[in-house]
Every structure is written in structure tokens, then in C-alpha cells.
Image (cartoon, rainbow, N blue to C red; front, side, top):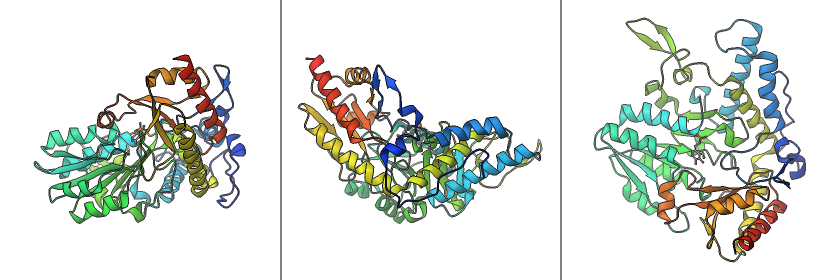
Length: 419
Ligand code: PMP
């Protein structure tokens, strides 16, 4: 039991009531530039329900204390709540053990940890690492760095004009030099849901390990690491309605055991002498220093919150938003949707003829509508489409079709303003 927090019963069969859910998110009920806020920047970060906000504040009000080594009441409470979040995270991803759940700062740190600890140890000159055209910079740069260091080669899976990965091309890239495949599960810029199960099976056939960037999958769909058989998966708490600065790296225990620690310091050691240090057991081997304690606890509460709504409900509502949004936005003259993959999450990237995405973003903001514009940390993907960037509206389960109507009106207004 986390002090000060009580979660509603998990009930995925209860009817989905978007207005009731919106009441859980205080930030949504404000005016921006004189208009009720329409928040369509969920792929950048999602909003937080009261329960998550309260979990952070209750930690500092009631039991702020360092974890793991303290014997006093508050330290025990904090340790209990933090480790309970690890168990919630394990269940959330269906990992087989909490030893496979490493707490990190977020997806970026999770990928860097694997590139650094696994890549440095196991990549040999001439080996190959495969990523895709639609990767976020955080799933490109760490691999470039380790490939440079180890003399390995980065190979890229191409995509088609709709934003689907070309699986046949992927098959051609695989060979006995392939040691790591690291791909995004759901693209933040296009919304494409990649066929990761097939990608994993094919990689395993040549003996490669697979890392999934789960940052944009976990806000929208249940992810089962055992069913997928992925070797590593990274996610960010702030995308799943939890606090920033927190995340999960899942790794198969067998692989994590073989890897060297990512950082050295307190917590990650068993014994230290000037001659020799022995490392702590999993998962602490990868968790040097005092962690973000309130962040971990509140991420656990965010997971409870998602479970209380149910991914089935989330997926259905977001699918409705995606279908509706795609239909009404497509009717705007001069608007082109970038990314029309067969499987998509609730992300719509678009361009409007003659209007720079930056101008669109600024002028929508003046109407209280928050979208994101730019390259979305996917510069190579923008190069693939020969565009500098897009406007991106990304929906969460608390968004409504009425808000999408406001976006459509907003875009029409910008078109009129800019002639
Ligand atoms: N990968 C994807 C697909 C993302 O959308 C993001 C965040 N925009 C990241 C990785 C990086 O996540 P973070 O900044 O939380 O580490």
C-alpha cells in the first residue's frame, strides 16, 4: 500500500467514459490563449492523472527517504513502494522476473545502456547492427557511437512511401554478421506499428538479439515481452502518463547477467576494495546511485491507472479517434498526411500546401491547440520523404472527436489567415 494513494478497482469491462476520464487530468481544464486547451502533443509527452501527481506529492509529504539501506520507518515505506513499482512494471510487460526490470531515466537511457553494455562487449569488427529508416535519434546515435568504437557497421531497413517497413529488404540485410537488431515498435513521427514479432523471429534465426524501442507502443497497447520474445525493450514513464525522468529497460535475465554495468557507484556494488569490486545482483547491477524514487513510485501508479482503464478500451477509443481524424483532416484541401501505414497508432503527421509547419504550429497555439512541428527527432526519416518536418497531432485516450473538429477548424483558419 502506497501512503496516500488508493486506486480504483481494475475493471476493463466497464464502459469507457471519456468525460469521466478527463476529470482525472487537471491540466486539461484550462484556457490557453483564451481557448479551452486542446492537447494533441501526446507523443511528445502525455498528461498526468491526479493519482500520479498525488503519488509524487505524498511521497515528499509523507515518507521521503532514501531506499534499500535504511532501517527506519520511512525508508522501509519508500523501499516497499519503489520495489512494488518494479513488480507492477514486471506485470505490465509480462516479464518473467523483476530481475529483468531495470529502472532508467527513460527510453534514451535504456537504449544507451544496451548499446554501451551489450554492444561494447559483444560487437566485433565487421559485425552488423540493423536499425530502420524511421528510428528516433535515440535509437540511431547510440548505435552509431558503439559501431564506430567497435568497427561494426550500421545497416538500415528501408520503408515504402506509406511508411511501412520493407520486410523483404530486412530479410536481405540479415546474415551471420548481424549481431543486434534495434527497431521502433511504433513510430513517433508516422504512427506506423511495425511487425516486430516477425522482425524478432527473423533476427533470432541468424542468432542476433533484438532491442525494441517501446516508447510509443506502451501508451497505446499491451506489450508482452515473453510473447514477443524480444531481448530488450525500453520505455519512458512520461509517455505512459507517469512522471518525466523515469523509465524501464526490460532485458532477458540471461543477457543482463552477461553484460557489464553501465555506470559505477553506490547501489550497483556488492563489495568494494581498492583492489577489486564485485557487482550487485540484478536488477541493481544497472542502477548506480540514488534513483528517482518518487518517479518510480508514481510510474507504478500510472501503470495502475492504465490498468484501471484497460488497454482494450484505450485501443478502441484511440482507433476511433484515428479513423475520424484521418477522415476529416483528409478532406481539408491541400492537406497531405505523411504516414499511411497498414497498422497505425493514433498519430497523424501532415503538411498543408504553402504553409510551413512552424507557422501552422504557432497559429494553432494561438487558438489553444497544442500540436508538435518539426523533424520529431527523426531527421533521416524526414530526409526519406524529402521534407524538413511535419505537423503532428497525436491523440491519447482522453482526447475527443470534438477536439479533432476544433483542429480542423483551426487549420482552416490558418489557411485563411495565410491567404
Ligand atoms: N523513441 C521514440 C519513438 C520516442 O518517441 C521518444 C520520445 N520522443 C524516444 C525514443 C526518447 O524518449 P525519451 O526522451 O523519453 O528518452
